[in-house]
Amino acid sequence: MGSLGMLNALILRNNSFTGKFSVFLKNCYELIMLDLGDNRFSGRIPYWLGVNLQMLSLRRNQFSGNLSPSLCDLTNIQLLDLSENNLSGQIFKCLKNFTAMSQNVTSTSTKDPGAVNFPYSTITFSDKFDFSALLMWKGEERLFKNNKLILRTIDLSSNQLIGDIPEEIGNLIG
Image 1 (cartoon, rainbow, N blue to C red):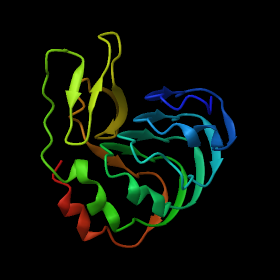
Image 2: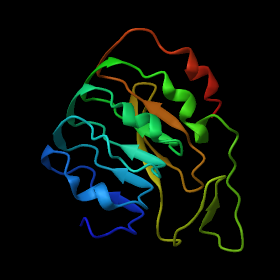
Image 3: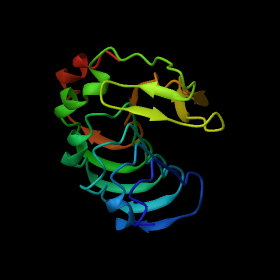
Image 4: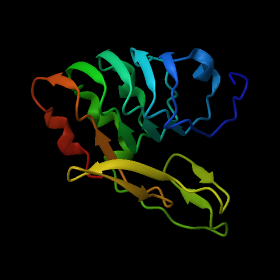
């Protein structure tokens, strides 16, 4: 799978995968959506996650250690779900780096109904491809269809994080 450099989305949610995060994704430079939620991955979140990621879900795994400083490099991130792991330490102050969450970003259709425009890129998907996010909302797990990629969220709940909530979170208007 490491030779799939042009891979845009990888969804392996809700399986029984175990072990450390595999380096096979390290060469997937075009990856914009990675969903490995509801598995049993363990260890630290890798520092080499793709900077093009717009949606990252690692929820309900067994990741541990402090939040990786490399998460600060995810400037295009719009959905970050690290909930229900064993992460510790403080929430990073680099939230202001999440440019896609700190600007009003609108999705607009062009001639292609499957095209979505961002300040950083245009992503085209077939009509058969739906972006959906399984999120905790008011204490209940709900499925959000996010076909226009306008939903923006950070979920760090159910970890062992400490300290203050950074003031920089106020910069995230999305």
